[in-house]
Image 1 (spheres, rainbow, N blue to C red):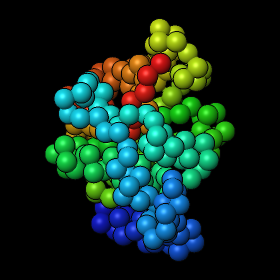
Image 2: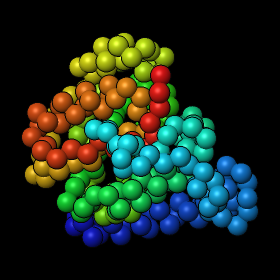
Image 3: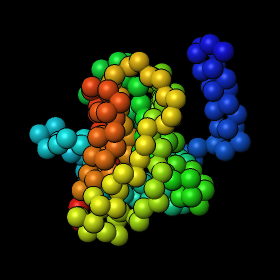
Image 4: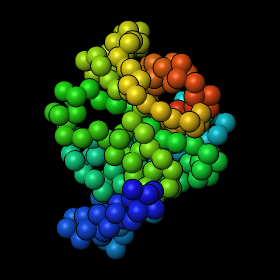
Length: 218
């Protein structure tokens, strides 16, 4: 099955989903009408992280206010309009800052148990939407093989120990492109992304962009 045919099938499926579950025509943050999901005022209230303050892990904004509310609505309340908005703001960043056509995209995985409990992997959803919208390939590169405690409940040093050796490269993976964008939702100490980064380097990815929606603090 050719890539063009696959994209056509995906577009038809998305159109059908849009008919069955139409996107809200109001702001899901402030309830302003006649906007699709988020109004310009709320979007402008997201505290962005300027280029001068970006580190090894790149984050779109600070974890608070509108951005935090969108992440929580998506992650814990199954609000997929919030998920689409989050994907779209990352798309804007990728288009502006990366020569994105040269990259493939992947995401931080959940364990099978955690994904079953939540019902979906929010990072996978965002990565797949970005892939469709920007026409770049998405791969499941990492799998989580170790059950871990929630990082947000741990101290800084505990987070690195908790996530140590939690991931493996998916078996049988064949990827020729050495450039990859790794998506996560929130970073605090960077422990999860740095653990994943070590594995990706071993798999000979030589250009790895670590990209998150938000940066938080302990």
